[in-house]
Image (cartoon, rainbow over all chains, first blue to last red; front, side, top):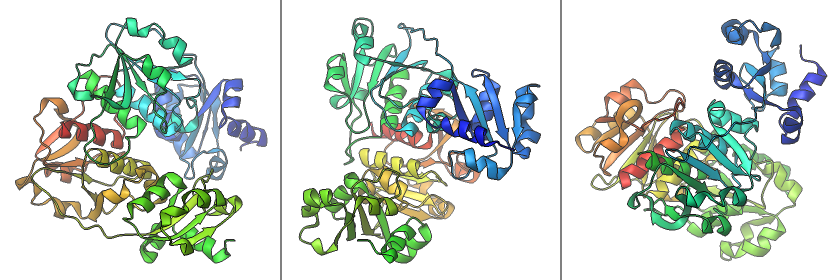
Length: 248
Length: 248
């Protein structure tokens, strides 16, 4: 049975302010929760689950059954972010990423003011597919612990280091170390330039693209060639296409 | 002033059943509505807009001002799909796509049971970027006139023909005409095979991938090489990467 104060606590984690204060975040549904439990990267504080989940998956908690709270489906509905909640919600402790940059072989993705949680989650998932380790976000980029981001990472969250920085400062010396690619609409065709994996790839905001300030700090402006008439590509799609090309 | 019956009518268009019955769909926000008005592909039946939009954009209706209904922001909130509604909602008439297949130069995208409206919208937008004209969907794929699909197409909707077919029947003779690529997790590495643009590209459901039945009807199974640990790529991302490679 969920208490009123538990409901309030869990609901508060929908908001960045409280996630920051409490140092926790929520994940919904067996797909994400189970994988986060298996990965053991984020400490699990509490599991709210219906009895079907408990019967099938409580072994994932490795004898820490004291943190499972069995709830009814109608209670799950109260704390879920989604209109069709799915068996389980987990409370996990946020973790400060320990970032080491490898400038010899790896690409670092830099995101300027990505606003859509689904886009950030999908970028994290694609980064994980292509073996990227680090993503550097502007301070105005959506929070990685936003429940919708967590959901769309499909559990890649724990494998990618995401840090929030002042991008101008962070970028200041990078061009001297590796090529800095700026994804823009008027750059060189992606497949015509000799790209290297050890690089920084800059992706801009969904509506406005990269700021002029950051573009000026790039080594090469690159563009995914357009054949049809769409005004632009989705930011997560553009990121994935360029990562695919860089990793080849 | 919005009448109760108008509100009910507009709200009913959130559901496929009523969109099919009434032959109409809704688009929200100046970005999509304005572009659909400019394209003139879909006939506009009615515009519900706040006075700011009317002052700035009513010229887009080309003297058909009788179809504009000025509403207050609180009324917009009642009919909008989004929690932060944006100035305008347009009612447009659905259109039966006239599809001609060009088997000499063009790629046709085939989608099996794509469920997420954002994914279908993003696939349509990417298809429009890469000059694709036709998308063939299984009958269980989400409806293109779903408001969230319309939104995420970013107005590419009118430029792409999307039809819903029995895929097995539709596909039966295609392998004899063009290569049929199946996007799977255990195929040949995408960049290692000599792909051609004139082809069919098959993309499967988000959770289950392509059905065995369809895979058996393909010419080549292709995979986007994985370097990291993510279990899979988002379906819209995978589609876009393969389209990028096919169009090169």
